[in-house]
Length: 203
Image (cartoon, rainbow, N blue to C red; front, side):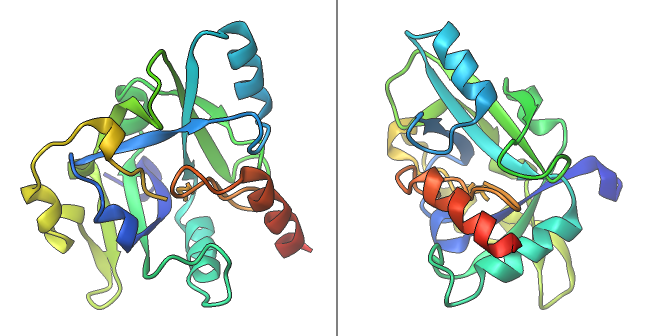
């Protein structure tokens, strides 16, 4: 694949290694976190379901800028070693997620992928296989399979989605993104705080 065939995320090495079933899952979105307009409308139209979302940066350059920011020891969302990951652009939609522009960022900086789910868990039943992901190896200066970099991920037994932590753009994105919010890396950090931080950093 070419460079334009990928989306990017900044993920925490700690969070990645907490995944038990080899799947990146979307976090449960709540309206008291960052108030995404599209997700608010979807939830209002489907009050008996939950909305789950996961974010990706659209370009490697933008993701690298965020990686540098998140890697700072002064960053309030710092959670150990941060890494740059890339994912095939068709992976989120192939897993059943719907694509929207992430309105927490400037247009074209990040994509918000979401899905409705009647489950009550913190993470979606849908997910993206970690086998599709690659991580930037700073020492070797090239992309390598996530499983090659962290072989223990491929040897773990499956676990219920409710017991699996989604990583963090962010991912967040983070799971979040650029000038706007960094999504809740562990599903609990408040998106509004992310959004305010992003606004301050853009000044």
